Length: 159
Image (cartoon, rainbow, N blue to C red; front, top):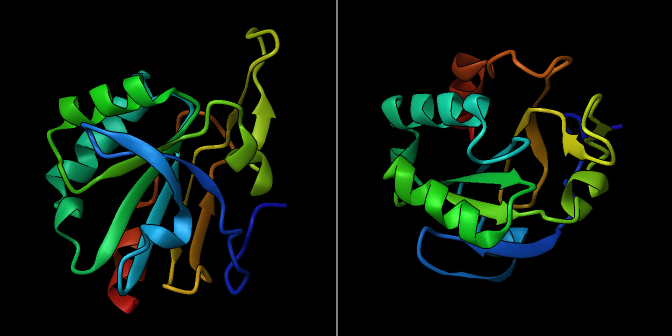
């Protein structure tokens, strides 16, 4: 079962991309002073991811005060960096979860019908504090619904 409010997200390590470079980094190493928003999406250049992340840019999520905005997707680091350049939001970072280890550690992976042998994380968002404790959790029960942006922003305000 994915983490819920009050539980602690595992401190995973994966390649963290900033739009130019990537290096193996722990989640705790990029959580800002107040916390982070951790967003799981299937693939960086999917229509859903493009739509969601452009909405986050327009909403000013790259200007959260001392709160990191971190994506996690199944793409490799080169695709992740290209996606971040496409977004033109230099404060966002993405973890490259190529093998699905991060998604699996949070029990988010689901097999995709008509995509033999492919699993992606359920679209989800977690607002976590600096100790990686979940302050807000959302896991979609379908593949296309948007994230509850207003609720996530309210949770960030409460950090």
